[in-house]
Length: 426
Image (tube, rainbow, N blue to C red; front, side, top):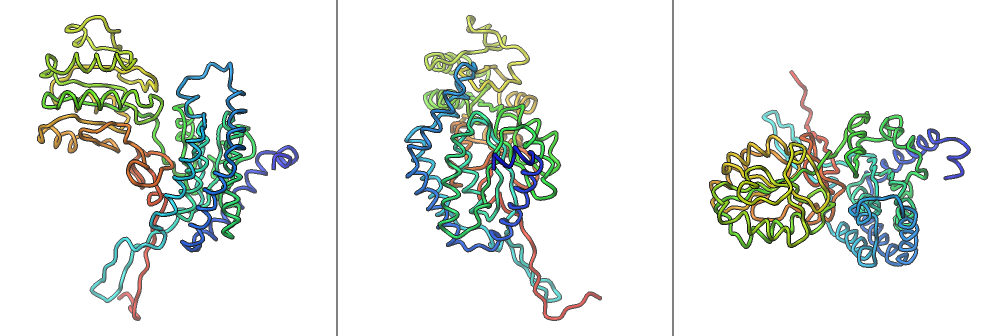
C-alpha cells in the first residue's frame, strides 16, 4: 500500500480505503455474533503470539522520538510493555464476551391502529479514528468497532506508526481466521497529514463518524474541519470539590490518586476546590499529601493567605489541562461556590464531589452537566473499561448521540421496524 501511495497519491489511496471500508461495513452489518467473536478471540491470540514483534516495533518508535523533548505523559502513552500487550489481548477477549448490540430491540409498542413498532440497534457504518501516540488504540478501536458491526479506518500518529502497524497485522489475521472481510479494519499506510484531511472530508461519503484521540490541537482541528459527525472531547479539565462533610482520610487518598496515578490521562484531576468551611480541617493535610506525592501546587489567593509558600495561581491556571504533576487549588464558598467555579471553567468531561452530606451530593449531581459525575471516587475512573464497557474508543463531551465513554453500545444507531396487517393511512 505504501508503494501505491507513492505512485497514485494520498487522495487516490484514501478514496480506495473508503470504498473498501464501505463494502466491508455492509458485510459486517449482517455478520453473526459467532463470527465476530471468533475474529476477536483470534485477534487476541495473534497479539500474544506476536508479542516480540510488537515490542520490537515499539522500541523503534521510542528510539525515533529520542531527542524530541516530548512530555513524559506522551512517552507514557507511546510505551508498550509485556504487561500492556497482555492487557490489550485480554481487553479484546472481554469485548468478545459482551452482548452483541446489533439487532437488539431497544423499545417496542403497538399503536391503536394495530401497527407494531420496534426500535432496533444497527451499526453506524464506517468509523474513522484519528489518534496520536497511543498504539493500544489500534486494538481497542478495531475490536470495539467490529463488535458493534462497524468497519473502521485507523489513522495513528507518526510517532507510533510501527507499533500500530504491528498490532494491525494481528487484527487482520483475526478477521481472516473468522472469514470476515480484511478491509473491516484498515490502517492508513502513510503519515502524510493530507490523509487526515481526506478522512475529515468523509472520503466521498464513506465515513459516517470521526473519533479523534489525542491532544487539544488534533481534536480542535477535527472538530473545526470535519464534514461528518464527531465524537470527541477537546480537554479533560476535571475538578474535585472537597466539602466540609468529607471524610479527610478518604479525601486524601482519592485526590492523590485522581491527580497522580497517571497524570497524562484525560480523567486526571486538574483543579481542586475546597469548601471554605474546611480550611482548618482538610486543606493543609490534603496539600501535604499532594506535595509528598510530588505534585506542584498552584494556589489561589485565599489558599495563600492561610498557607503561604505555594506558587500563586493565575487566571490561566483555572483553564489549563496540565497533563502533568501540577494541580490548581482554590477555596470556594461551599457547594454553591464549587458549582459556580466548575460551570465557569469546566470542559464538561469529569467532576467529583467528596462529601458525606447527601444534600451536597444531590446538588452536585443535579446542577452540573459534565459527561461524568462521581461521588467519593477518583476521577481516574472516567474510563470505559472501568464502567464495564470492555474498553472505549474515546470519551465524548458532546450532547448528541454518544456521551461519556464511547463503548460498543454507543457505536450503534437504530432503525424502526414497523409491522402491519394491511393498514393504510386515512
